[in-house]
Length: 265
Image 1 (cartoon, rainbow, N blue to C red):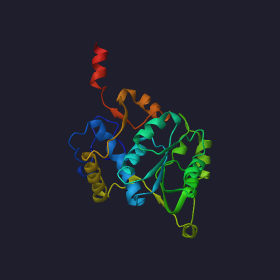
Image 2 (cartoon, rainbow, N blue to C red):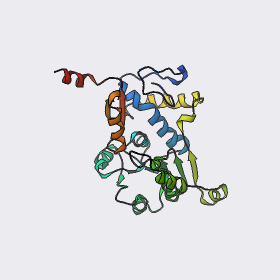
Image 3 (cartoon, one colour):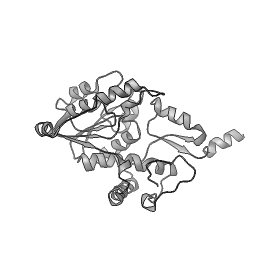
Image 4 (tube, helix red, strand yellow):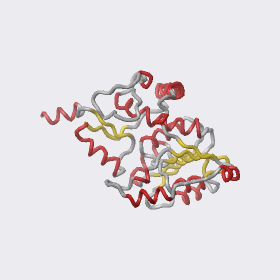
């Protein structure tokens, strides 16, 4: 398994040995491709920053995506964690099966209001990959001693083409708070970006060892939405762009063998 900030959509890649990890026994190559980035991110957000403990509550945005599905599985390793997850309505059955107690359709509902109906005080941890005004909503949803971990700005992307107005709006609405305000709120705000941990070999390696152990125990298993050959990369990106995926979208250099045989026949 390989970690690199970029350049992995190739048939041959060259990375430092320190950024490679042995696959656990019984793991498929597709699962291995889906494990590192998503599960390291989810693990460090929930446990290193979030300090997730039994009987707490978590709001996971984009709950059917790669990091979302990893976070759900990791939450299930802790006793009695209540999971709120935002996703389009078509994915709610899948989310419920995976352990989300309260799926919320962000397209038709105000997720903050829905959370408050069930948990008037809010939640203990919010995973925020959205940015913009959603980060402010996340902060306001936190209970006292709650933690907001921001790890992306998905709101910058609104369609197939760049929308400068949407980007400007997201930037303008970006959450900002000073130390004195934090003092009064009894809340924590954290920022996470795995791409800037290139030199943290021991820290990241320790997390990978824990994840491999959890996989070997059957407590986590990467969810693969679909597998696409390199020449269908545009279709693979469209699958994510149209928010159809539940789990990880995987690219492989060649078409899967079964499909190749069908084409030959």
